[in-house]
Image (cartoon, rainbow, N blue to C red; front, side):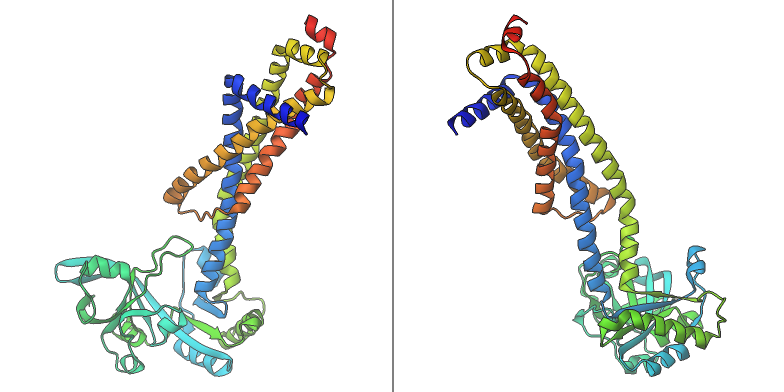
Length: 404
C-alpha cells in the first residue's frame, strides 16, 4: 500500500513538474469533456422539458385542429371543424368530461388609452381555463351566461397585460379590440413559452360567441376543440375512435387523408425531440471528435515525455522499481491529468450551457449523472490513451535507458 501511495505521489509531482504538457492535456481533455457533459445535460433537459410540457398539456387531453397534415405542412389551416361537430363529439364520448371549442385571431391590434399592441385573441367557453389547467389568478373567469349573451368580457395573459397596463391592475378596465370595448374580468397565471418558443401569455381570451359573431362574422366553423377524458390510461384508444368518428361525420372515403389533426401528448414529445435532436447530434459529433483529439494529444505528449525521461526511468528501474511500478506511475499521471481535465470540463460545461440557454433557449438540466458521465469518460481517456506510453516506459531496459 505504501508503495502504491509513493507511486501516486510521484505521478502527481510529475504532473506539476511538466507544466506545458499538463496545460495542453488539460485544455484538450476539458473541451472534450465539456462537450459530452453538455450533451448529457441537454438530453436530460429535453426529457425533463418533455415531461413538463406533457404535464402542462394534460396526460388526459387531446387537441383537435382543422386541416390535415398536408395542410399544416403547406402553412394552411382550413376550417373543417364545426360547432355542431364539437357538440356531436360531446354527445358520443361520455367519458370525456370536457369538450371545449376554440377559435383564434392572430396579430389583432388592441389598445388601452394611448397604448396599442398586437396580440392573439382566443375565443372559447367558460371552461377554457379548466380545459388547459390554466388558473385565473386575479379577478374571475367569464361565465356560460357571458358566452350565451355574447358579452364583451375577457381574460388577459400576463405578457399582454404588461404591454397594455404596465403595473396597473387590468381587472375591470376596458381594452378596444378592433373597435369593440372588452372588459377584462380576469388575469391568467403565467404560462411561459410553447415548445416552439411562442409566448403563451401573449393573448386575450373572450367568449367564443363574441369572437365568432362580432369579430369573425362566423356562425359555423371553429379552429378546433380540446377534449379531456376521465380514464386517461385509454387515451390512445380514444385517438383512433375519435379519428373514425370525425372522418365519418366529415364523409371522408377511406382513400382520403384526414382533414383534421389530432394532437396528443405523444405528438408534443415527438415535436420537442425533433426540435432539440439536431442540436444534440451536432454537439455529440463535436464532443466525440474533441474527445478523440484529446486522447491523441495526450498519447503523443506522453510518448514524447517517455523519450525525455528515459534516463529517469532507467535509474528508477536500476534502483529496484519494477515494470509494474513504471506502468502505474505513467498511467497515474495520465489519469490525474484527465481527472483534473474532467473537473475543468464540467465547470466549462456549466458556463457554456448558460450561454446556450440564453441564445437558443435550449432545455439543459445538470445532474450527478452528467457529472459522473464526464468523470468516467475522463478516466477512459486517461487509461485508454495513456496505456501505450505507459507500457513503452515500463518496457524500457534499465541499462539501455541509462545509456540513452
